[in-house]
Image (cartoon, rainbow, N blue to C red; front, side, top):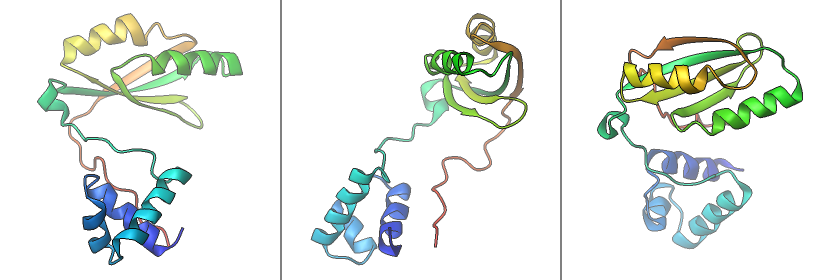
Length: 152
């Protein structure tokens, strides 16, 4: 990956709806080579896909919490079963496994506090292998959906 590929990635992270012609102009490349590089970035997995970034409040998801999860055991079966169960909960919009304690952090979006409490009691607290859940409420997004930084 060279500097031109990085420029293409930067532009697409800021506006994924650019046409190849617009993209080529922004990175100062002719259309055919730009298109070829774009397809190579998609083929190699550097570009994993394209999506719309939706405002949660516009679709009624006005409440967000971070849930910290500590597992009872960290054997392969427990981890695998837990991760499959978390992946099946649509309100979990991001889940990351961590080093140390806690074991996971979940980003959860719901309509309101009551919906979060129900999700917490019915689904999150019953996830397999869970020893402890701790949650905190998101007050405000300071940095959100930022493009990845350019690498040298």
